[in-house]
Each structure stands twice: as C-alpha cells, then as structure tokens.
Image 1 (tube, one colour):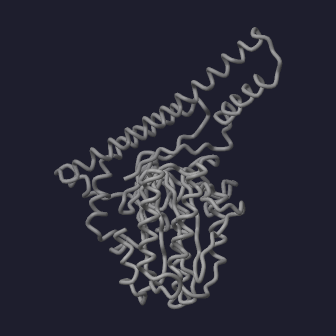
Image 2 (cartoon, rainbow, N blue to C red; image 1 turned 90 degrees about the horizontal axis):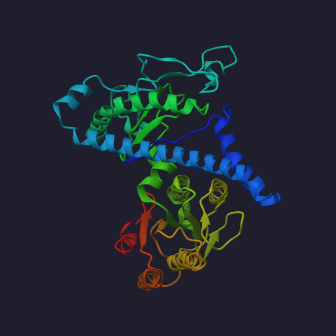
Image 3 (cartoon, rainbow, N blue to C red; image 1 turned 120 degrees about the vertical axis):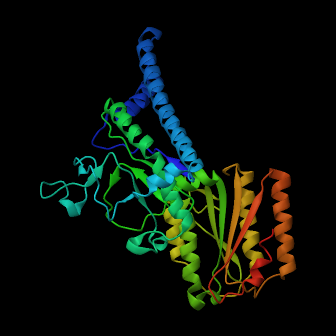
Length: 398
C-alpha cells in the first residue's frame, strides 16, 4: 500500500511561497552584491533561519507519512478482530452517496465546485466533514448493490482502514494549528490500497463518481516501485488494425506514461518492418525525464501513431536496448530499475527468427547486468482476444 500526506499550497495564501522565494532572493543577493563580511552576516543568519524552517517542515511531512504508514499496518494486523468487525457494521461514508454527520461549507479559498455556485454568492461552496473519512473505488470494482464492492478483499480493506480514522481526524486537527502559523490550509490525509480502494479525510462530496483509481496516480506508483527506466515497445504493424488492437496498445501505453513521475526515465519505441523512437519535442535518442511536459508530448505522439507494414520483433527489441544503453552510458538514467514493456498482436512476420530474437534479449540483458549492474525486466502483452498468446509467451520467462 502507498500513503501520502501530500501538501497542496493554496495560491491565495502566499506566506509559505514567500518564505521559499525569500531563500532564493537572499542567495542571489549574496552572489551578486559586493558586501563586506559585516554586511553579509545578517543575510547569512536570515538565510540559515529560513532554510532551517523549511527543513523542519519537510521533516514534519515525512514523520506524518511514516506515522500514517504505521497506523495502516497496525489496522491491517487487527483486520480479523472482533472490534474491527464490530466497527465495520456501521460501514464507511462515500463522497457520491453519503450525507456526512458533521458536514459544513468550505471557504471559497479551500474548494469550490461550480455546480454549487462557484463561490460567487449564488450557492454553497463544496461540502466537507473534517471529522469523517470517506472511501472510493473505481467504477469497474463497484459491482454490488448501490455501487458497493463485491470482492471480499476490497470489503476487508474498507473495513480495516476504518480503524485509522481516529488517527487521521486527530492529525487534521493538529495540522490546522500547525499550518495556520504559515497561513496555509492543511491538505487531506489519504491512503491508497493495491486493490484500488482509496480512503481520505476530510470527507468531501465528489463531483464525479468512480473515475478515481489511486493505483494510477504518480504518488502511488512512485511509492510502489521507486525510480525506474521504462521503455515501451509498441507494435504498429498492419495487423494491429484488426479487432481494435492499435487502440488497445495506445491506451495501455498512455496509461503507463501517466503513472510515471519526475524521478523516472521513459522512451517509446514503435516498430513494424523497422523500429524508431517516438520522440518528445527534444528529439533525443535517450530516455527522457518523465516531466509533465515530456509525458504530454509523448502521449500526443502516441495518439498520432498509425499502423502499417510487417512485424519485426528483433528491430523493436534492438532499438529498445540501444536506447537504454545510450542513456546509461551518458548517465541520464534513473539509476534504478529497468523495465521493457513489449506490446504486440503476437505474430512475427519479418526480421530474424524467434531464436535470434531470444538470443538478442539474453545477450542484451546480460550485457546491461555485466557492464552496468542493471537488472532488466521484460513484460510482454498480447493485445486483443484473438491474438495468438502462445507466440508471445516465449519471452515471458526472460
């Protein structure tokens, strides 16, 4: 599971931002102004005080996250107790269908929903309850009556995470006091489970229901897998036009890219008769940092891919390994995990035979391990119900 006490600063409350900008301005003054040691001393003290305060804030956020982790782990260990089962009898609140016991209107600078009047005096701002947590699950998992889950593990997760509500409530009360000194509104405390359940406090009314899946959020992926080098290898041959396979490949690739964080590196390889790297705007032949800008550019390029030509597995893998090695050699890598995600309809129709493709994969993964101490994982995906999976499974064990 992944936990977060992510801090979202409200732009209308600028004290915290002003403090950060102050550190930068002091540093600039020290670099650009020819002052004497006597003149520098007050600036040095001011800079040190501000930097120490920022360190204390970051330390608090880290400690809060670890405490939430401990609370969730403790709740999980008690999931079978009589007390837990008794607590579950009252169920959990939901942002789409529940009326909160202590709900109140938010201030305009906290959260505004246009349907509620937009904070312009024409209606109520968003409703929330600072004493109550809510749970949500993706709509695909809400298969029971009144959009409840039917999966026993999901039900159990909703049950045991309810034990952490007291901690989340107390934490929010303390956060209000702490952040008020910076004129900043505290953010939500939330938990995302591996099965798609999401619990947060304060409880809020959702504008849309069933669209949020914590497992697809960058904070969840980063906590689950750490920094990584990811190469997506997409089959764009003519046969991918059959049964909507091309659309499936694009959707899968875009979903993966959206989960990446700035600590990750990513490249997209398209192949048919030959292979080529789908570039971000930089035009580099290396993996790029997964910034929002680079991710959006790659997503746009993926959406524009067209199908045609034969299917050359060897060319796709060769291009992927070449991009990885160039990136590692130039020290532009994440320095951690390496993954190649290979998406195809499962039929090789051009290029070297399967045995040679296997030799390329074995030799290349061994080379990355020997020269750069990098362990490379290969994940293969056979797209479409009609795709011959057996022809792709041969790569899975590598």
